[in-house]
Amino acid sequence: MNLFPELKNKYTKDTMNAREAQRLAEFIAFGPVVFQTARIMLDTGIMDMLRDSDNGMTIAEVADKSGLSIYAAKCLLEASLCIGIVLVNPETDRFRISKTGWFLITDPAVRVNINFNHDVNYLGWFNLEEALKDGKPAGLKTLGDWPTVYEGLSSLPKRIQDSWFGFDHFYSDNSFDQALEIVFSNKPKTLLDVGGNTGRWALRCVGYNKDVNVTILDLPQQIGMMKENIKGCEGAGRISGLGVNLLDETAEMPSDRKFEAVWMSQFLDCFSEEQVVSILRRAVKVMNNESRLYIMETFWDRQRYEPAALCLTLTSLYFTAIANGNSKMYHSEDMERLVKEAGLEIETIHDGLGQGHSIMVCKRKQYY
Image 1 (spheres, rainbow, N blue to C red):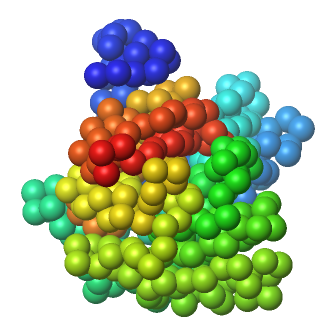
Image 2: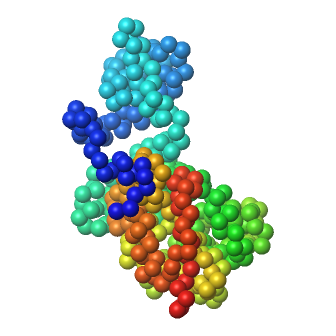
Image 3: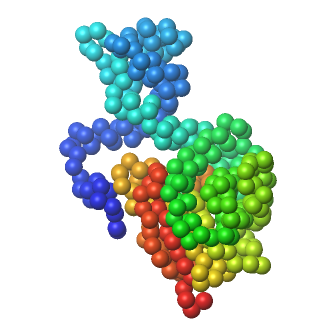
């Protein structure tokens, strides 16, 4: 298995002593309450209070300022102490945040992940084992009655919808500036945005290049949301939408013309390997030999830092339990294999974009 250097160092050697390993095992056993304790410490503002205090705070001061009872404040602070997100001065019994607590407060990715897991996934995780065995998103029923989460996005309650889109947009948006330079280095005038969602990438494209016309391909419900989202925005007249369910293998991409660029951002991770090959084969039909297909994904093996790989491999299980039951965050070697099976070849791979994205630049095999 190919891994970037930090991942190789982390994942191929067992460096913990017995006591550290035992603690981690117990940490895992109490994982759900660890998560909820940290989330409540954030949502009640206690973590911010501790950070902003000059000399830390006592349990009584935390209770008074947060509006919680002494009992509640004591339970939270003592649990947080053992979790490792706060520290205590044993002489004054005053609490302050730890380095881990600091990251909980200041790292925007951490907050996005907490909201996503609490609002979208938490109840559904209970059904993960069933989803793994059946290949169906057994946890999705905690949100609604749809075959996949994508059909239900427009119907989700606002808080859940905000957390889902907040998670999706946070990771993609941070890569857009670099991605635009890569895609438009070839100066395409026609771009097919497959899985264009709310149109954020399309708007960036028409703002970046005044000559490009973008066609967004997505589920009919998403196309409706996209049209509302881009209404009145500069360049919106050069964006069109086409509602298609690509899970239907008979559903083709627009075949009346060839596109100079085909864009798939955080899209193929929403499909099984067989479905990825089917979608890419249909994409080949709307390309010519000069066209390029750009696959932007967060491949877990190409992450520079280990925490990113941790987040991505666990996000795979969101796809299992909630999204669709059969997709994942791919290892780049798996995606390369699927790309070749679909009749494409990889021209180059750009790593290190934004929050850990890579872009595979693909072209048609010349025998097509």
